[in-house]
Amino acid sequence: QEYHIFKPIIICFIGLYQSIPIIWMILLYRQKHYLCPQNQSIHLMTQEDHDIFIENRDKIIELLPLRFLYKDYKINKWWFEVSEMYRRIIFVSVLPIISSISATKASFGCILAVMSIVYFREEEPYVYEFTNVFAYLAQFIILLTFYGALSIETGVMLVFGLSDFGIGILLLICNLLTILFVLVMTWRRYNIKKVESRWRRVLTDIEFDIIASVMNDDENVHVDYCCSELTHNTSMIELPTTDGSSSGGGGSREKVYSISSSSHHSDRQSSHHHHQSHQQLLSQHLLNWKDVIITKKVGAGAFGEVFKGTCMGEPVAIKTMLDITKANVKDFRSEILLTATLRHPNIVNFVGACWGMELICM
Image (spheres, rainbow, N blue to C red):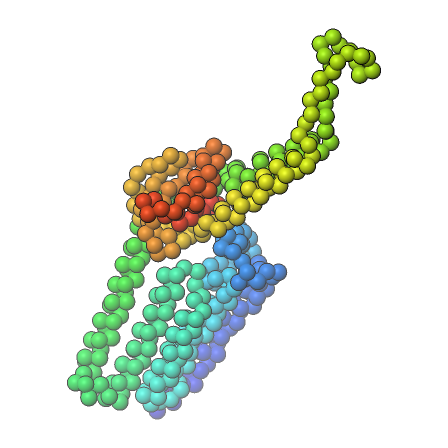
């Protein structure tokens, strides 16, 4: 009788609560052109394009009131908070009114938990990998909780000698271990951020222009172009002798020939080939700065400090550049081109380098 009285009341409240996620979805959809790229596929975006898009998106004033709805999710999952609200509504509010039999509700809970596990594993909607891992782990805790309720109702665990109290203790231990895992990972992430804050910073526009110019070798490209134009229009220069005789007179003349157009064309082709090969080598060893994690400082190098850390999970030594000058960036570029081609058992292997956004290192 109490259940039948409770059921229509909770249905009314569930209906009223639908207005909140619906309003949120309408507000988000109206700003969709700011939240997600419209003319570019998400899968074709590089990590740098992704970071630049997020940085520009966070500056849009119209989105600031809605930032709490999308900031933790990937740019193509801007709607996920709304769907997550409906998932919570189903678990918390809909399951209790499915049936008056607890075992039936627990069974539906197990099914929904398994579906959630599959979804979070395949989609990984959050920006940070740690959040995706924790969300995935949390679905197993939910599944274990519903399965524990189902075991208590059916008494299936009594076959293994586990009482209702034992199931409760097991669930308590699992939840405490999950909380401990989150605290440890959060503390570890805090320490990493604390170390990174000493050397990771957003580059100024001037510093970014210096890096882009040097790493693209713009100066040499411009010089090669100017030289090619000059030699294309000039094939021979005649210098008068010291007696000042003119071209029409009988005095001797000294002739200074420039490099022929064909010879210079060959040199330009060779220079262009070297430029392309260098740029290709640099692009092959360009790393995403988010894949580089610093753990502790171990020394100092020619243009910055040296750290111990990891790159894509592998232990590495990391040289950072603190003072962004044209001379330092040129040395940085030259060292990349040199070390990228060295392979020897007695030489530390070169993994890669990154330049741009917040980190200049190799």
